[in-house]
Length: 310
Length: 310
Figure (cartoon, each protein chain N blue to C red):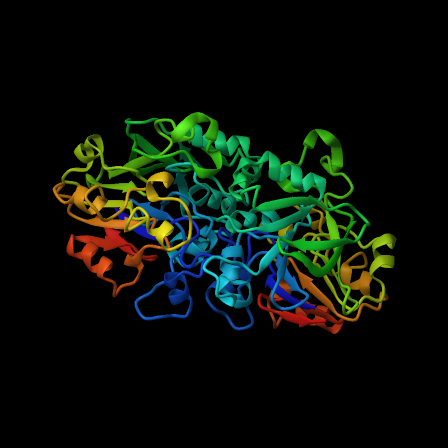
């Protein structure tokens, strides 16, 4: 199984268009230790030819151009794409709007929860994906699904599971109390398995808490890509960037007694990679003490173009 | 007045993700005479500080990163943007979906026809632009409008006018006959004027025909950016890329007796620049006879990063 990190940043990317924070300013001026990142997405393949997107970020066109394996040049056909399916973990704009780039009458399949698929069907802009060419399939919770492309079995199974989280920002309903109308399954993690090699990894780009259920699920895993939005819960507030904490946005922090570094410490996960990293996160500075703290705890900081073979 | 071409390609960009035509293959391998292009958008400013987008392409984040004048680094403020307004010429996905990149609580104004604004309001994904921060203003036809940013007058007026065209692909209604439910104003051109300098240019990225009304309007203009989608009406059909002609897609060709080169020949336009160029168009090859034909007729082939001062 081959895995490529197409984009390792949270929504907005790194740098973010309207942000002049130290990280964004440093990466723009090419400061040492800073690397630009596009928005959150992985690609996975069981055979190196047929690829599945895990989330479709607004930067997808740029990501495809930067990733020859995902381009049409891999085949001699006039119009073709190695992208055979896309799996969406939630309705966040930075996870679904990249689908818009995959128009032009190219067949592939889209998998998502019923709620995410209803967002696609209620937004006419997604009609640009011709329904005769692009099938949409509902992904239930806690049931492994054999991923299909237009040409058949892709040699991968996906199991979606609910994780603590929040409904997408633009779907928040303030009349519905402190959880803004969030329902179970609005944020999901994915267990991806290649049955032929029996290899498995987890992809959890958004998660508000590593609770007992999630801990039990991922204990001893070979590889987990995990929500690396913030280092500390109030870092955006303290930096004067935004009045929202990580908890308000549905993202656990890396640090602290209730953070992901602590939560994973005893789970025995062999390889732990942070993705969906917000521009405010000090781990984006390779020379920061926070970067060292995460790496000393056995975490890797995901980057665009990172490749892992399982 | 300063004008920057942010993206000079038609929808899909150049290269296009799923296309392996000669042009796309050549630009991917870095062949001499070929330059990659992002999707259709201009930026215009009366003062070099405050900028207005003319259309918002899916590549907007990449375009902002490539254009320092549009980045937050121009100001010392922690969160800021020189982009004060966006004007949309139609509801095409490649002209509106870039708005999604302009989230993050940054104030600016969006101008579009009533029909385009109704697309924005009926697609919940655009709620990511907080309505308290991002005002939407209807742009009527044939009436100059003083463009406003959140801080006031931007020193530019815009006049929208209907041009022959077609409703956006994803809004086509096949029950409504040969024009798919197109109504006047679905495709508009823009006349942009800087009152202080009394300079004017036209932006017409989609247009099905240079009829008498349009000819009268642009006769003698200092500068026109014009629909350069196709060189010949059936080039995509002949290349085996798509069964649609330019006429079916609402785009006039460059060549031929009913093409734009012929139509502009007697209009006395001082500077003529093709934008919205499809990947199939042979003018994208700098060494092609078609490129020479267009240039010999006084046309410039727009490119990303092109700057014009009026």
